[in-house]
Amino acid sequence: MNGPVVVGVGASPSSLAAVETAAWEAERRGVGLRLAHAVAWPSDPVAPGVPPWDPDGAGLRASAGGALAEAERHARRVSPRLPITSEVAVGEPGTVLESQSRAASLAVVGGRRQGRFGGLPFGSVAGRLTAQGRCPVLVVRGRTGRSGPVVLASDDASPAARAAAEFAFAEAAQRAAELVVLHTRGHGRDGSAVVAELRRTYPDVVVRHRRIRGRNRPVVVGASAGAQLAVVGVPTHTGLTDTLTGSLGRALLHHAPCTVAVVPPGAPKR
Image (cartoon, rainbow, N blue to C red):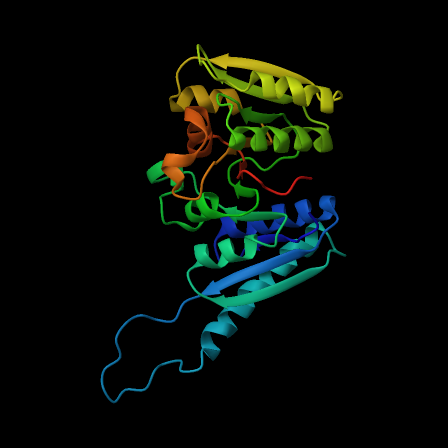
């Protein structure tokens, strides 16, 4: 798919890190970058006879323009000649980005590691986009280096797990990175057959399997330590916490100390 890379723009450091990652991703994919900023009208009631403080939204749009200009400066540092467009949309950020993702090849958003569900509470921008986005979503946090392996959670043989595996192999091939495939011990329906098939499609990708016991935070953090990307699947658009592919997928998204790609079934292929 030749759609742009879409990134959510805000004022936080994690947002600017997401912009830089999105610019790098757009450049290597040969597509444009779209900066999306959401604004919401104030919901506080206005006393009778008192005019709205910003009736035409000029103040909100001016503030958004400043955030977008700063984001573009960061993107230009990564890729000076990258085609960049921007949009200010009225609405909740997660809803705006979900809409933008329908025509995108990739969506990128910043994510914090602290808080409920590893900094991705249901209803947050990152949480909503990963649960309902229509293209692969990168949640940028922690280590953003370009070295180290790609890590894939493969304890499931569902269509969503296949989509995640296809994405992980393609990324490992294009990044010239090793692929580490995580399995849970004794799982009856793991993705071994899918991985074996994709190894034939990507013969140059070095694959290392790692079976792990348990799914607590230290185990998952240790398995993904030093990785440049972790990949998980999400089979439906009904809710992040119930639909991530397998226990390993949930654990990686919540605790992996690196950027995580969440891949829905039917996502555009590279």
